[in-house]
Amino acid sequence: MKLFPRDLQGTGLAIGLTILSVMIFGVQDACAKILVQTWSPFQITMMRYWAFGLFALLMVTRRAPLREAFRSRMPVTQTLRGLLLTLDIWVFALAIRTVPLAELQSIISLYPLVVTLMAIPLLGERVGPWRLGAVALGFVGVLVILRPGGLPLTTDVIFALCAVAAYSSYIVLTRRVAQVDSTATSMVYVGVVGMVLTTAVGVWFWLPMDWSGLVLVAIVMATTVAAHTLMMAALKLAPASTVQPFNYLALPWAMVLSIVVFGHFIDWVSLAGAVVIVGSGLIVWARERHRNVAISRAEANPPGKE
Image 1 (cartoon, rainbow, N blue to C red):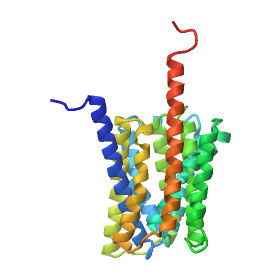
Image 2: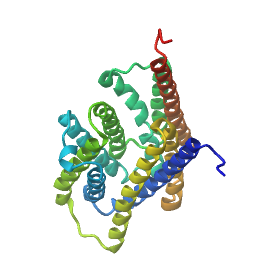
Image 3: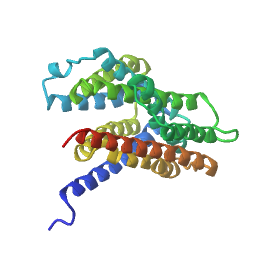
Image 4: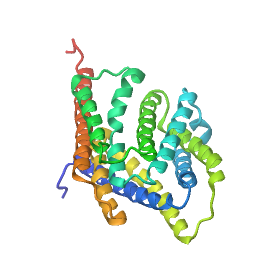
């Protein structure tokens, strides 16, 4: 006998898969942080992209012939998406060298707010005072973390902020191409562009790896595939708006990993700033969800419908 309706069972499983993928991504970041202390971030990014690129190609060929997947109505924008995601992973790998995991994840949590701002000029979206206020509050949270005596404003911190900008731009362009291209097309462009670009750069930074490094790289590659697979499975079971809030569990998980693996504790003021950023992101999510529900109802019941 089923205790819950089938739709609720699907939603619960989607939430569970999302949480598991968040935890796997956190383990990946911890392994990457260890690796970039010895090997170049460009070498590690290249090897990570080998796994992600092959995964993307495998998923695409299971849905449609590869030639068809490359047919895009916006090929320049698709290529730019691939460049932006590659840039995001590069600067994130540079940032993680010295920025503690908890503080880094706090800064990265700013991206939904930046997406909200970018969507105004690039997608023509209208943003009300609630969301604009939440965006402003989120930036205040970052200033709290970067306050005098807090996280030093180093080059690597600037790399973290660049990662937010690059990933936010990637998300906005992904929304744009989703209106005209299939998911398979979007995936194959990101995988191939990233694999080619990171390899073209990464080979110049290659250093031989010992067994410990190879094991950690293998974990990074395996977790990349596993986390993306779980997230894709979650999105098949429930809409993105349902699972999005659970992505913020990445912050407390990063704090746990930072303490257990690296012995670093986030200070209380920086923690307060992180909470402000996450809270601002949840406000934006709630307002967007409310807006989407209102639009759906209006489309289902247009004026004059009997």
